[in-house]
Amino acid sequence: MSTLLGYHFKKPLVIAIDGPAGAGKSTTARALAAALSYLYLDTGALYRAMTWKIIQEKIDPDNLSEIASFCEDIDLSLTVTGKKTEVWVDGVNVTAFLRDPAVTKLSSRISALAPVRKKLLVIQQQVGEKGGIVAEGRDIGRVVFPDADLKFYFDADADVRGMRRCKDLKKQGIKTNISSTTQALKTRDFKDTSRKLSPLKKDDDAIVLDTTDLNPDEVLQAILKEVVRVGVSCPD
Ligand code: DC
Image (cartoon, rainbow, N blue to C red; front, side, top):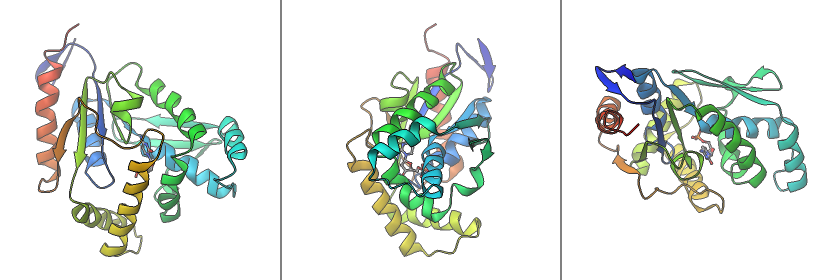
């Protein structure tokens, strides 16, 4: 039993947050993990790291046997804390390269490949096996942690998501504008929701939160209410 936020929690929870890009998953997951002293797992960073390496190695994503042996050989590891997920490829920390627009653009295509998903599923489940984790992505509640104590599905109006993503990119010094960012985000949404393997889809037992008109603190407060509801009353 642990005491958090003034409540007694019977066990460290597994909290899954899924949803499209720009819905507020990362901001909330990071803040929630910090509030609970949990691990924050940004699963998109893993798909981005695979994509980054595929670009570096000039591997053809359509060459499935090359992709399969790439997945077998790649040395991918993670450092997960309450604040960030850092990814290491062949002993090099590649986290700083993962938001590169070329990586973002190709990541939906790479994440649709079976050997890539198989490889990353094992890694994600290992990180979360002891609980005490907030994991965010596209298939967390349905595939990675189907028995999660709490599942959320975040959504927001596409134009609002595009505006948020455009602001983020500008902060990172990446030149862009609202219409091209929104268009790219819609294209990625389409790929992520229509792929055959683990498409982005709301799980039946996920709590839906539309963040269109909410600021990050309002989202966090709404989520914390659910965490307290489930965490303090969950069975041993
Ligand atoms: O969350 P993100 O934008 O960093 O994710 C990058 C890509 O990775 C996204 O287009 C979809 C894919 N992804 C996925 O398929 N499954 C996840 N659990 C997380 C991300």
